[in-house]
Image 1: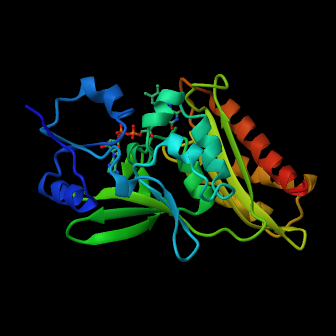
Image 2 (image 1 turned 60 degrees about the vertical axis):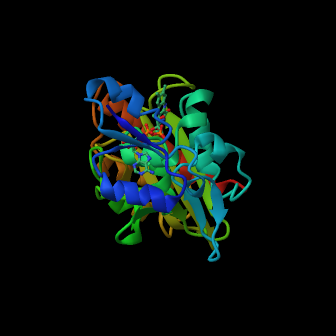
Length: 283
Ligand SMILES: Cc1cc2nc3c(=O)[nH]c(=O)nc-3n(C[C@H](O)[C@H](O)[C@H](O)COP(=O)(O)OP(=O)(O)OC[C@H]3O[C@@H](n4cnc5c(N)ncnc54)[C@H](O)[C@@H]3O)c2cc1C
């Protein structure tokens, strides 16, 4: 018999997590239910869906944004907080599954499943997000998203921890953002690749570029060499070509049922070049 617990407060949720790390954490259930028939029933389920302290988007005193782990995609799409900063998260949310999935699926679920095709994950890389992890015994800690995902479907979360939020630092004025999901069709498709990117112009030169790429490797990756190739250069055709070449030299995309490595590389380099051209356009 599986126990079913629905904590009313975060403290209660963390206490249960500490006492029963073997219980399954349930948020929207859209990942868990797909794989549920392949694993034995858990001894217990801790249902976090709609746990209020974990839901919603708020602005912290230092200007950063705090997105609760149980925030759904529909919440992201309907929230007015940080609309411009979160434009690429909203673009990703709009393309996740269909309305039913957007109404149930949560940011925390996408983070902890940590699939290479998790659509929000490159967005966290581009926005410089930190993941907040909390436990009853040690309180809260924050980990940069780059360090949170430690391998194929692996994360830095300890057995007594919950993901409680994602935080995003305030962006520099003039930051431009770019998101593209490429799949077999425009709606309801598993990504062949995703790119999330941010940068701004300082005296006409590209500053602080951050490029997050998904579905190209066993985990979401940062385009570090592309960023180096763009930084401090004008957003012209020469830089677009340099950035594309840097990406081609930096990554060896996976080759799987969803797409060939060649296709992924061609499209990814084209999209990096397109982002550079976007920076040249009026905001
Ligand atoms: C038809 C369909 C279409 C989909 N389309 C897409 C798509 O286009 N793009 C995409 O990225 N994904 C897609 N998904 C996958 C899924 O909807 C997302 O990954 C979603 O964000 C998962 O969130 P959830 O709340 O439903 O997670 P759940 O299924 O409830 O949980 C997923 C995992 O996270 C753990 N977990 C959840 N919350 C926490 C927490 N706060 N702390 C600790 N552990 C936690 C759970 O224990 C579990 O291991 C799709 C799924 C389906 C069924």
